[in-house]
Length: 304
Image 1 (spheres, rainbow, N blue to C red):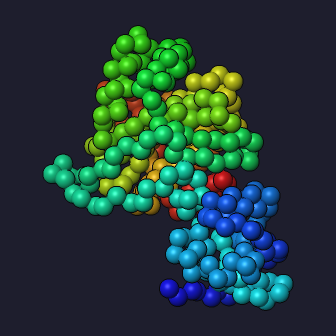
Image 2: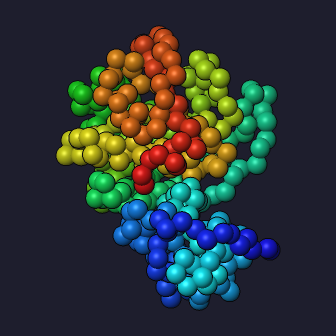
Image 3: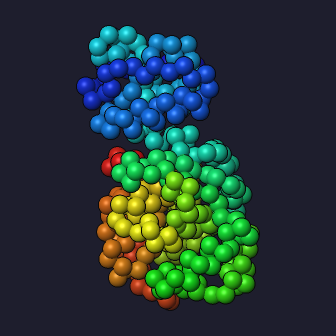
C-alpha cells in the first residue's frame, strides 16, 4: 500500500506528537480519543515516530489519514484528522459491521442487513459531560422500562403507545422481527435515559412523502428518564443518534426525521444539530415537518 505524504498542516494541529505504547487498535483509538478531548481546538493529531512502521496498516484501517511533516520538527509522521476520525466507524461503534452488500429487491429498496444486537455505540460527550451509549432493546429484559416510559403523559402525547404491558410486548416482538427498523436504549454513564427507533427512510411511512434515497436513515426518540431532560442532554442525544446512524453505514448520506410541525422546541434542537427543514406535509395523525441532515454538514458543523 502506498502512503500519502501531505503538505505541512496548519497551526491548528496539535504541536506535540501523540506517544502511545498501545499494542492493539482499541488502545490506540482510546488514546486518540482522549487527546482530541483534551485539545478541543485541535483539528489534527500526529502519532509519534514509533507508529511509522504501522502507518500503512493504520491508513488501510481508516484511522490514520496519511504522513505529514510535523510543524516543529519537520519529521514525517502519521497524522489523524479530527473530522475524519469522528466519521470513522471505529471511533464510536462498539462492533463495526462494515457495509452490507448492495442487493436490490423487487420493492425498490436494497436488502437490509440483520438488526444489530447488544451494545452498538459508545462516546463521551464533552458538552454534556457524560458517556453516551446505545444498545439494542431487549424485548423481555427492557419491557418494564419501556412500559413505564410509554405510559408517561408527556411521552404518550407524541408516541400514542400508553398501552398495557402485554400490548407493548407484542409491539416490541413485531419490531424485533422488522427488517427495516429496530429499537435502541440510550444510556448516560450506564443509566437508561432514552429510547430510539432507527429506520430506513425508503421503507418507512415517511418514504412516499419525499425523494428517498436507498441509504437514508431516520430516527424517532423519547427521553424517558425525567432526570435527563433539558437542553444540554437533549442536544447530546440528537448528536449521538445522528452520529450513530451515519457510522452504521458509510453509504448513508442523509439522516431524516418527521417531527410534528408544531413541535417548535424539537425543530430548534434539530436545527442546532445541522438538520434543515425541507417542507411540511400531512400524515393521517399529524402535520409533520421533513427534517434532513446531510452527512457533510453534520461532520463539518457539529462538535463531537
